[in-house]
View 1 (cartoon, rainbow, N blue to C red):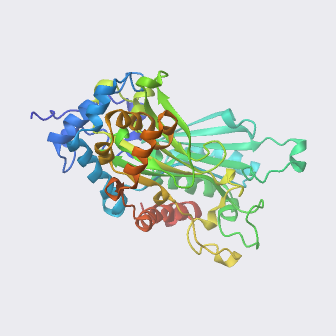
View 2: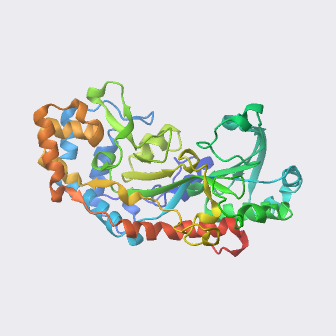
Length: 437
C-alpha cells in the first residue's frame, strides 16, 4: 500500500497552532505515526472519516454502512487493543493532560494597574499579544478582562473588577463559585504549563506579595468554603484515545445516566451521536465523551480533506466543576495529598475519578443482532434504551454482562498517571519559579 508523501501540514491554520500542543500526534499523517499499523489504520480511518461532513458534523449515515463499519472484526480488535492499553497501563500508553482550568484569587486594583503598566516585561519573556475587553460571557461577575494570546498556542483570560449587587449579601451562594476580585482561566492542554508558569511568575512579580498570600497555605482552620485562599473552580482531565473511533467508544457511568446527547443530523434514523455527557452537564461535575477531530473541522481549524489523512481519535474528559458541587471551589492548597493537612484537611488531594466509567469492548457489536447493533452505534448505551423493544433490551443486557465484552480499567494507575500532572500544576501555581518544565 502506497504511503503518504512527506510534506507540510499546510491545511492547518497558523492561528490554531495551540492544537499541536493539545494533540501530539493528531496532525501527523497516518503513514508517519510512530509504530503505526498503517495497513489497518489507514482503511479504518478512511471509512470512518467518510461519515464526516465539511460542517464538522456527521452526515446522514445509512444502516448498512454503519453496520459494516462496527462489525468489521479487524477494526474492532484494533480499537479494543488501543483502549485496553490506555485503560490498563496508562502510564505507558497515554498522555495525561488537563484541558480547561479556572481559579479565582484575591488581588487588588494596584496589582491590576501594575499588570497593565508592566506588560512589556511579560513580552520580553514570551511572545504574547494582550488586549482589553469587557467581561464578555462573565460580565455578570466581572466588568473587565484582559486576554493574553500566546504565539506558541493558547490564551489566558484574566477577569477582574467584580460586579457587586446589593442583594448578594443576603443570597445563598453555597452552590456558586466563591467570589474573588480576580479570575484566571485557560485551556492548559493548548497553552502548556511552561507558558502558564511564565505568566504566573510575571503576575506574582506585579503583586507585591498579594499573589503569595492568595495561593499559599490558608492558615485559618475550617477555611474551606470561605472567602480565604485561592480556589480552583474548574479542572478538566482528559484521556486521549488514538485509533478509537467514537462508535467504538462505549461507556457507562454506574452512578449516573447520560443526561445529554449531541446527535446529528436531526433525523435520528440516520444520526450518529457526536458527544455523550455522563452526569448533569449544567449543574455538577460530569464526563464528556466525544471525537475532537469533528470539532476541529467545525471551527475550521482543519479541512475535511485533511481530516481524512489522520487517524481516528476519541477523548474522555472528567470535568470537575467544584464551584457547582456545593463546595464553592477547591482550595489550591488542597490539590495534592497532605498539602493542606495542617488545616485539618485529610489531605487526599484531587481525584480524577476517570476510572469510574465502565468501558465496553468494540467487540460487543459482534454479539448483537444487526438492527440492535446499528441502534447501539447510533445512540450509545444509555441513549439507546428508548429505541428498543422488550426482546432487544434482553439481548443487550445479556451482551453487557459478558466479561469478554468488558474492558478492565486500572483506576489506581489512572490516578497515579494524572497525579504527576496535578502535582506540576500545584507547584506551578504556588511557586512558579520552582517548576522545571
